[in-house]
Image: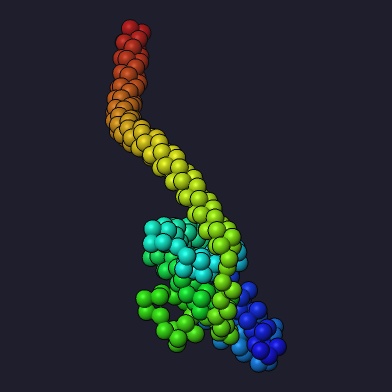
Length: 283
C-alpha cells in the first residue's frame, strides 16, 4: 500500500467516526489542508449513513473487535461440539450481537445523534455480518464503513462500496485450537453474554424507573395544567366582574355629577330668592 493510500485510510477512519452532521465540513477542511492527490482522495469520501457511523463508533470502542475474535475461536472449536452445545452457542452469539447493537446505539446517543429503531436494526445486521463472516469482519473492523452491511443481500461489489479507502482482505483463520483454548473461548463468550445480559437487565431497570418518573411527572403536569386552567377561568370571571363594577362606578359618577350640578343650581336659586326677598323688605 502506498503512503498516500495509508494516509487516506487513516483520514477516513478519523472522519467517519465523527457525527454525520459534522462530517462534510471536517472532510472539506481536511482535504484542503492535505492538498494534492491525498486531498482529492479525502474530498471524495462519502458521508456515512447513521448505521455505518454507529458501527464505526463501536469499532473505536473496541468491543466489536473482541467479539469477532471470540467468534473466530468458537467457530474453530465447533467441530468438537454436539448439536445442543452448538444451539446454545448460537443463542449466545445472537444475544451478544444484540448487546453490541445496543452499545452502538448508546455511543451514538452520547455523541448527540440518537438512532431510530430502523437504524439500530441495520447496525445489528452489520454487527452480525461481521461476527459471522471473516471477510465482512475485515471490512467492518477498519472503522471506515460508509454503509450498513446485510448478509442477506451481500456481494463483493456491495462490500467494496460499503467501505471508504482500501478494501482489506479477510484475516487468516487462526490455527485450530486445542481443547483448553476451545474451553477458554467458550468461557470468554459465556462471560461476554452474561455481561451483556447484566447490562440489558440494568438498562431495563433504568427504563422502568424512567417510565415511572415520566408517569409521575406527567400526572403532576396534568394537575398543574388543570389548576392553571381553573385560575385562568377565575381570572376571566374576575375581569368580567371588574369591568361590570367599573361600569357601575361610571354610572354612579355621572349621577353624582348630575346631583352636584342640581345642588349648585338649587343653591344659586335660593340665593337669588333670598336676595329678592331682602330687596322687597327694604322697599
